[in-house]
Image 1 (cartoon, rainbow, N blue to C red):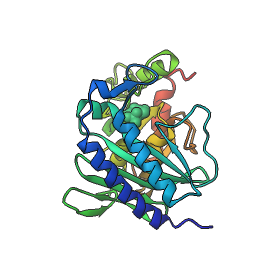
Image 2 (cartoon, rainbow, N blue to C red):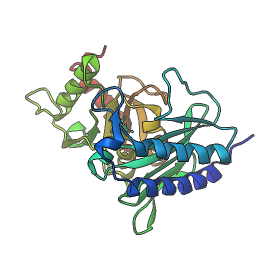
Image 3 (cartoon, helix red, strand yellow):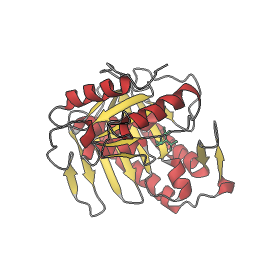
Length: 291
Ligand code: IPD
């Protein structure tokens, strides 16, 4: 049967607000938190409680759909073609823990492994980003103003030097992954003399989904990350593409990224979008050993 995406969207918005209330009411403490793979990979009781609430509500309403969530994911779980909710109860857990307000709940629906609906809600700033495949994406701000994305007619790209670029450290901080990250950041930030692109600035704000929404709205020109997961990008992906943005892979030539490939490069809409992607790939290529 055909999925009514609008109905899913409306329900996800309702659930996102309920999750938001749980997040803002919570007081994360060291005692109610722990780590997963390493000391930078935090999880709090609130992450688990929100995921539980969200998965329960979604499974009651859509019993035939599958569910993939950050806190209940098991190694080897794979996306299938069936409609699947892809959920991060708190994207930006480290920010949440430190009471830094760049945090969101992220609710996506993937169909045939492709993002179809996305709802990203920051309960601290009361900003809601939503998108439905084929129907556009929107920002509802704290004053309830509802605006289609992007917020302004995007300017044509000039070159990398003129870009504001989001990147993330993630929690993989060793081995080749770490080398690739550091070398990419150097290649972007450094002066021309040091072999860099001398971009306007690098931002590492701490939430993959909010970064994608930032690129969708036009506040960021691009966002690069190696190492995040499907639930970190599913919802924002729809919002980005419906705003004229484009998601490609972080590796040169990867024009058709998969939802679960963990290496992404998002670029806002605007004339010369493809050339800026080529320029980015071309620039990092010679400077980064990709293993
Ligand atoms: C993380 C954040 C972070 C990104 C990581 C993600 P989480 O999600 O989005 O910015 O660098 O790759 O895993 O753990 O806070 O849900």
